[in-house]
Length: 123
Image 1 (cartoon, rainbow, N blue to C red):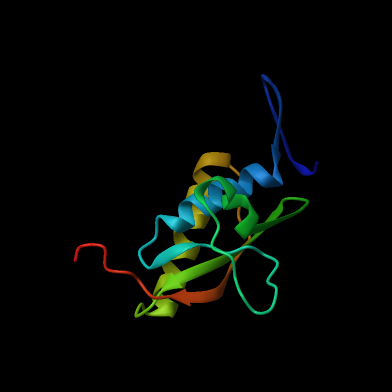
Image 2: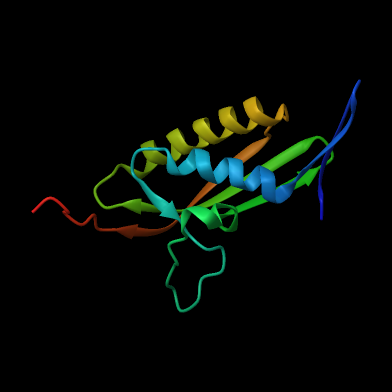
């Protein structure tokens, strides 16, 4: 398991890439327009909508020294302005990961894997 080691006066803390990915995925799905996270491995051009328990599978985290790179694979709702939703995701993920982990996020990339029609549940 790879991760980021943080030394404090009280000892050592190791944050796994999966833990960071879960934090990033949870932040991303809170954004307006995001239907969910998509699996990183697409087959036959179909993206799989991941459940809440699999948020980390829709996120790729790379740690290179003090550099932290995050790539999110998202499914958006039909009719949203993709550029605005992507900017919101980038800002929210960067802020949340930095606040919770104390690590500096160097780059956040958003890959829109699919657009889904929202179903009306009220009628």
